[in-house]
Amino acid sequence: MSTTELSAENFEQTVESNDIVLIDWWAPWCGPCRTFGPVFEKASEKHTDIVFGKINTDEQRDLAQAFNIRSIPTLFIFREKVLLFAEAGSLPASALDQVIEKVRALDMNEVRTKIAEAEEEARQAAEEGQAGGGA
Image 1: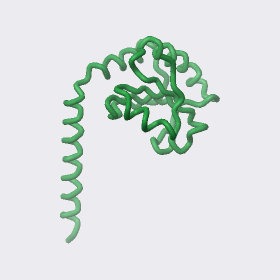
Image 2 (image 1 turned 90 degrees about the horizontal axis):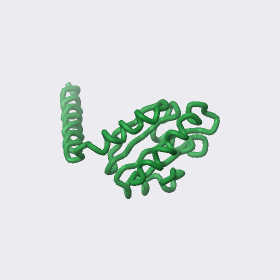
Image 3 (image 1 turned 90 degrees about the vertical axis):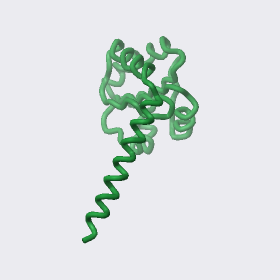
């Protein structure tokens, strides 16, 4: 499978309707992006069951801002609608393959449980902070 150009119009639908989605945030003027591009494209041909999307940050400024993209290239990996990996910088092919295999191996039920626990802890901390600050 080759890469798919993502935009504000198709981003959400792409993430929600595919099991694993890798996203390369890039721009045409970015040297490291041009280096990483062929690595990303080759991985898309190797891992045909995964959606590989590219987002041109020059053309999709609002989307890049919404996801707080400050450096490019930045790689995002979603699995079952959960953002599992977000890292700036170019990866060599072997490292990209390793990250993909680790994402495939994750127990998503365990991931969701940990997310729910962290959200509950944050909620309780916020409530305690509100309760303690009223005197």
